[in-house]
Length: 184
Image 1 (cartoon, helix red, strand yellow):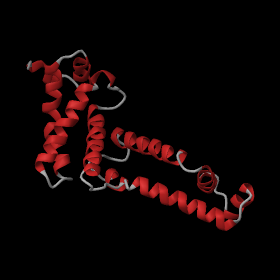
Image 2 (cartoon, helix red, strand yellow; image 1 turned 90 degrees about the vertical axis):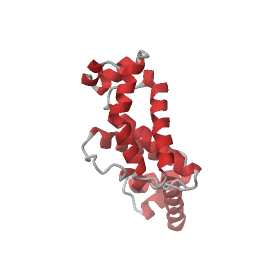
Image 3 (cartoon, helix red, strand yellow; image 1 turned 180 degrees about the vertical axis):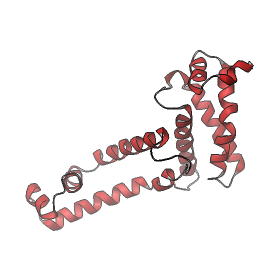
């Protein structure tokens, strides 16, 4: 590996990697492997699993190197891949992971950092997908309650239902979303 690669930015290295420069990608791996392994080791009781997941992450990043977006830092991208791989691992092993745990995964990331902004946006998109998948009446009642601030009675009037039906629809919608969020 050339010494001059160490002076390049992460995005410069990813640009070179997109052109099949394996040395540039190796420089990125060397730069972040230990950090990735520490991140995973702190969340798993299995050092071998942490190593496997870290290697899978970098393999996936290499495989998708031509689709890499330069809007965010490489570190942001790496942590997103790490978190998704960790969630997949937890699901496969029957150890579910809550969204709140995902949010707390990287305590070193400030709320205003690009990493935090990226994660918040990703979570909002995921929640929007979950809400869109709700049955129509549950979705409508929940959205009127949350986004419009309507009372149960106002929603009941608007949807031509009784208050008990609206409370039930909102409760079922919240329960469904909570289960999805907790990965059940």
